[in-house]
Image (tube, rainbow, N blue to C red; front, side, top):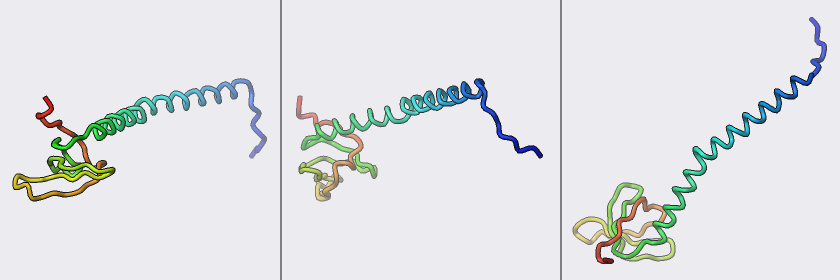
Length: 105
């Protein structure tokens, strides 16, 4: 067996540049397909929570619908059910969607 070292020629170095170009294109593609949409979604969620008001109907991450009755720094108190006796404090991050109250018209 011959274990002589491999000599790099000019063709080998251009192959490295092609490989680096593929990696760069893949990184840009991953940014536009995964990172950018996630940042855009997070920005809309932050805006939705910032505009949250008392009386708004919300949907939580666990699938419960409720009405906001009080808002604190990081916590909202939500009223669940039709009997109006189930009031639960929860984190603002647990809110998935907000439907504004109709009395703002």
